[in-house]
Image (cartoon, rainbow, N blue to C red; front, top):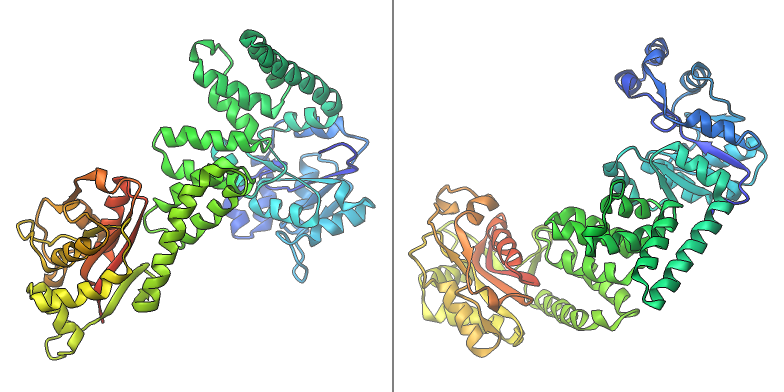
Amino acid sequence: MFMGYEALMFDLDGTLVDTSAIETWREKRSWHECIRHFHLTRVNPHVHLLLQSIQNKKIGIVTNAPYIYAEPLLKHHGIRYDALISYEKNQKNKPYPDPLFRCAQHMNVHIEHCIYVGNEPTDIAAAKAAGCTSVAYANTYSEVEQLLVYMPHLIIKNFSDLQYTLTEEKHMQKIARECFEQALEEKQKGNSWGYFRYLNEASDHGHGLAQYYLAKVLRKNPHLLYEGKNIRDLLYGAVMKMIPEAVFELGQLFEQENKWEKAKHFYRVAAHMDYAPAQYFFAKMKLRTPFSRMKLHIAHHWLKMCSEKTGKAIPLLNQVEKIVQFENDLKQHFYYDKGNENFFICNYLSNEKYEDEYSMRILGVKGRKQADIAYFSERISPLVSDEIVICCFPSSDHRNILTGIRKIAQFIAQEKGIDGTDCLVRWKSREKSSYGGERNIQSHVQTMKVFQREKIVGKHVLLLDDVTTSGSSLRAGEQLLLEAGALYVTKLALGKTK
């Protein structure tokens, strides 16, 4: 990756120099105040050692800070450079690649033979757009996670790692590769101790896949852990070398710890790295994420990608394609509230002076009139398939069980689908939203529970409600059903308050 490079280019603030102590003045663009307080800034560890070790290479600085600030800061810290490209008002600056091109031109080197190091997403974007090798600098694992999604070629936590990579790469790679190949040979022979030993050696020489495999061995055999070895450190080490298997493995680790958002983050990145297991798990997790826009189409996309590599995804892909078709059919017959991702059959005029047919029919359902219950049931039933679980949103009064919307759900389930009307239950009454009660999701979530979970686990659920206004009630129901194991929830109301 780094062999044959002609020059290194660096971002300035936060990369070469820690300028956090003068951040307030920088944000205000008070450059003279910044210069007065340069004594509060410090060069990041091992920067000078790195620059000394590559004296035969050209050094460029590309920053979005102005020249009147950048040049004296570099001089203050004695940082050598061959070209300085700073912010220019009438030019394209980072994240555009233009300043990197200008820097390479000043140094008379080819951009594809350059390495660019920075600590911000804009740095990675500029480097990748320019076509040079991008290295992200991160101080913490949290920063690693933030920068990982932009997929640089490498992430470093200190400049000594970069120095070692640049000055010892050929020799280091040879030893690491030989140790890793020996480890695989020992595994084929059934020599688990030899496998572990050579994995250790390859890992110590910075072999990313070896770090990943060693972490897996230690997770399965925690008694092999010894001082200086940490599973999470090994995985992050491999992740920083952009090993997709390690990115996925960290996702698995966080999912086991019930850290869903972190798990989803790592699955997403590994999916974009074209790792099939991550594409499958990310699609599953995306489907089960409440209030996530376009999640059905995103999951469908990744399952299609995954199914081209493994047959494991095909059953779930088939299931999702049926859901996509069902929702497309609903869009042909009913209205769709894009903001809340709810379907509704008609507008509902709550003011009594507007006595339109649909509003009167919805009032009839609320009053459990059989003719109106039959009317809406017959409009929905032809679109439902046998695999769909029909659930209904419970009344605000926990004693009011036999509601009109429940009768519609039961009527539909008699024809097609699975009766899930006993799944979502109100265990504690709450004031009706139309009477001044809270319209937030939590007021619903805290007063409802899911029973008969076995009916909905891994299933497509159709959740019915009589009237939706803000969408909070249906979103609360969706959240509880997904948390209970439903694969996906389609939300349909008879009417939407106009």
